[in-house]
Image 1 (cartoon, one colour):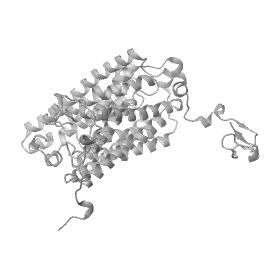
Image 2 (cartoon, rainbow, N blue to C red; image 1 turned 45 degrees about the vertical axis):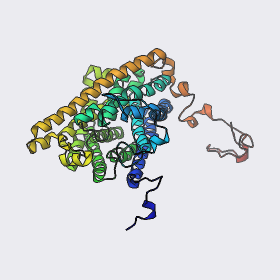
Image 3 (cartoon, helix red, strand yellow; image 1 turned 90 degrees about the horizontal axis):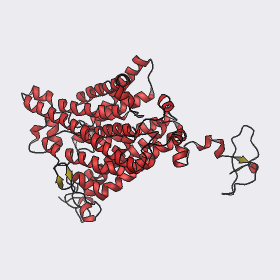
Image 4 (tube, helix red, strand yellow; image 1 turned 180 degrees about the horizontal axis):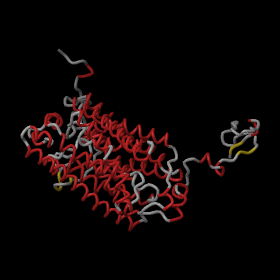
Length: 478
C-alpha cells in the first residue's frame, strides 16, 4: 500500500516531519501571538484612563517586536540550546537555514516552528510585566528594559525549567505550559519593577477609569480563546493530552470567573466587568502549569481556588499589608499572575495524575512525576512529597531570581535614563510621550471644519455630522 502523493517524503517534507503536528504547532503559536497582538494591546489600551491609552498599547506592541528580534539573535539558544552553565544555555543565533530546517529538540516539526512558538511565549511575558508599569514609566526606560530582561532573566528561567538540560527539569518540576516560566516570573518581575519605577500620581491612583470597557472585553476574549494555543501547544504534538489541556483550560477559567463574580456580588453588592476579567485571568494562569496532567474535576476545583484566593489577596489583603498597598500595580499583575501562578504550581504538585504525566513526558523515569494526592492514594507518599517539594522549591527559585535580576536591570536602566516620567509628562500622558492621542476626534483642537468647497488633500467632498449641516460642497476638514 502506497502513501498518497501529498504524504510522500521529499526534501521539503523529510520523513521525520509530521505535517499535522507542524500545522497545529504553527497555529498554536499564532493564536498565542494574537493574545499579545492585538489581545493585550487592546486590553491595556482600553482599561486605562484615556490619556494613557496610546502609551499602554504601545508598550505591549513594542515589547512583542523587540523580544522576537532578541529571541532569534540569541535568546532561543540561551533558553533551549547547549548548556553553558547548569542554569543557562550558550548564546547563539537562530537564523541560518541548516539550524532552522532541522528537527526540533522536541516534536516532529522543524526548529523554525519551535523558535516561533517559544518566541511568542517570551514576548507575552514582557507584555504581562508592562501591566504593572502602566501610567508612569519612561518609554525610553521601557525600551531598554525589554531586551535586558528577556536576556538576563527569562532565558535563565526557561532553560532551568523547560530545557531538557535544565537543573529543575532534571529534578522533575511540572510546568506544563508556563505557570512558572511566564506567569510567576512576570508577576514577580512586574511588581519588583513597579517598586523601582514608583507609583502613578496620587489622583490617578485614586481614580483611573477605563476608557472603553466593551473594547476591553474584546481584548480579554482574545486572551481567553488564545489560551487554547497557549496550553494546547504545550505537548508539541496533536494528541489526547493536547485535547485534555484545552478543555481543562477553559473549564478552569469559567469556574474562576463564576467564583470571582459571586464574591464581588456578595462583598460589594454588584458584579463588575473588571472583576470578571480578573477572574478569567487567574483561572487561566492557575491551570497553565497543570493543564494536561490533571483530571477535569481537578481543573474545576483549581478554578474555584483561583477565583477565591487571588480575589482575597487583591481585595482584602492588599489593603491591609502596608508593603502591598505601597506599590502601584494598575493591572494587578502581582495577584493575577504571581499569586495565581504560584497557586497553580502548588496545586499541580497535589493533583498531577501519574498516567497523564507519562503520556505528556514520555520519558523512562515518568514515575517521578506524581501528585501528592495520588502518592497518598497509591502508597507512594514519599514520591508525592518529593514532587510537592520540587514544585515549591521552583517557586522559591523563580521568585528570588526574578526579584534580584529585575532589581539589577532597573538600577542599570535608571543610570542611563530616568525610570519614571517627570511630573509634567505624568499630567499629560500620551500627548507628552508620543505626540498622539487615542481619541483625537473627540478633541476640537484636532479637527476644524471650514466652509470650503473641496478637501485639499484628496479633492473630495466631506460629510457633516453637525446638527445644522452645511451643504456638502461647502465643508472642508483641515
